[in-house]
Amino acid sequence: MKLIYKFSGEEVTVGDEVYVDEIKYNIIDITPPHKPSSSGKVFLEEAIDQLLTCEYYVDVIKAEWIDREDREWVN
Image (tube, rainbow, N blue to C red):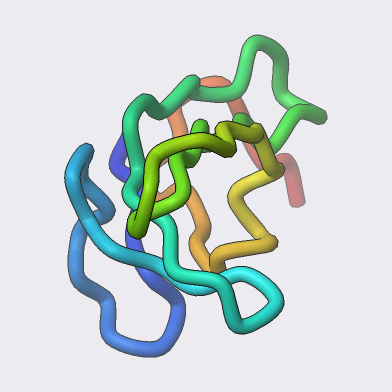
C-alpha cells in the first residue's frame, strides 16, 4: 500500500510541503487506514513557525492510497 498525490502520482512522504486553505504545512506523520472503510490520516505542522499542528484525512491534501491489500473487490 502506498500513499500518492492524485494529481501527479508521486508518493507522499514525511517532510513534503502541502497547502491546506492556502496555508503551507509540512507533513510530519502518516497513518495508514486501520480498516477497509478508512482513508487514513496525515499529520501536518505549519511550515512558517511550527506553532500549529493538525491532522486531516488524506483526501484533504488530494492524496489516495493505492495497492491496498485490505480491500478485495468481488465482481
